[in-house]
Length: 264
Image (cartoon, rainbow, N blue to C red; front, side, top):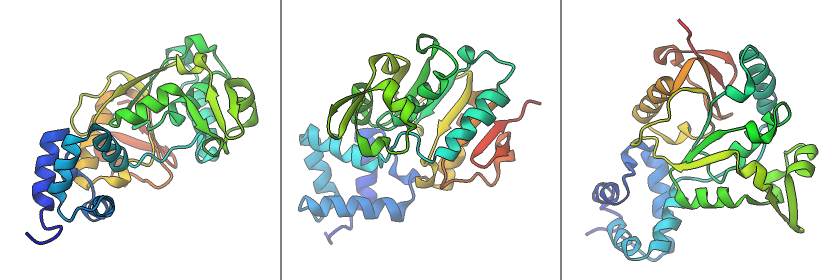
């Protein structure tokens, strides 16, 4: 068999193993990432690498982590978080008690995003009244999120008030977010292309994720988000993303990167 000629077979076998359908990701981008990794491990066939990760749980976990592109930072793109606070929380939901707002941080990676949401909410309501759902496909990323330990580079955009109030310094470059903040977030493993979405949400935050998927997969996810949100609910996406046909899914733009589910 020619080197790297078995990608189609690999995708089929990997789906049976993991439940992750690589056909739903942009192929050129994903194939390049996978090829780069398996070459590093000395393989010239995708399926030989697959056999290796079947036998090595740590390697399997590392591969899933690599596939899911866990790039996350606290308060990433501060101007967008300012809009989230002022335009969404304090404007769109001005007639609703903030303690009653249901928020889902989808594809939350290592927890920077849902914890950012908690700290913003805590400016207005006590921590013990805050509940955020957070999900990711990568169980290792979720474990890191639950531990809540971060390098300072993950926190470089955070307002100083948040760092002083909610973090404990462990060493010169490492901080841990408080247990009280961690307790506000309920983490779960969820595959956006296979698992049921939580219902009755007021806000869904899904940033810098859709860019990795095919149009078919994006359409599936957008339909799921629309069904997950209450009428008038808001979807917050990333700075590299735009939903050109949002009206097809029952949304209207209210700000750049923010879409509201049509009420009528």
